[in-house]
Length: 175
Image (cartoon, rainbow, N blue to C red; front, side, top):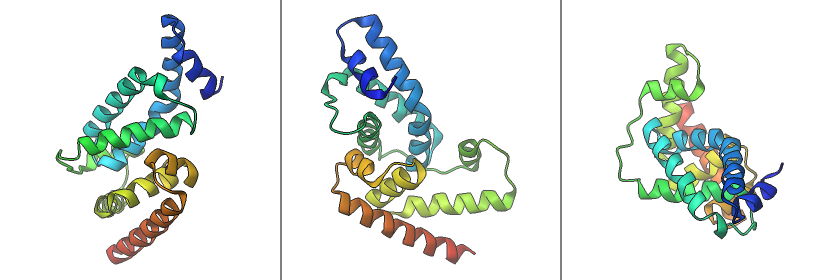
């Protein structure tokens, strides 16, 4: 069952069908959303808090989804807005969060490279960081990222290219 059908069911007035359909949407999108948010916020706890709030808001406002973009883009737009609201939180980056992101044990050298990458990502301007994480980290097309960030397509392409160059430069300095 595709997202459009599930969204229509979730928007239906029947409570049980709506909850089941929305549950399927959550199951389908929660892992990529949480990975994106861990990378975007830099902390596991903030990512989990924002993901939970995102799904609550999406459920409360499911009738506002018009289908102009993919459901995934709409969901990520909500999460980015929520992350902005929580931006005042401490953005500590801990090595155990990084190990959790990849789900495996890594050597100290690999961990250092990941920490360098996370630090370089954290230094990017917000739109560049979000754009590259959505496109390169989550596999969204430039158009999907543009919808999620409510930003023109050409700007997203520029942000991604700029972010790649900034990250490449930062990582080359670390070598």
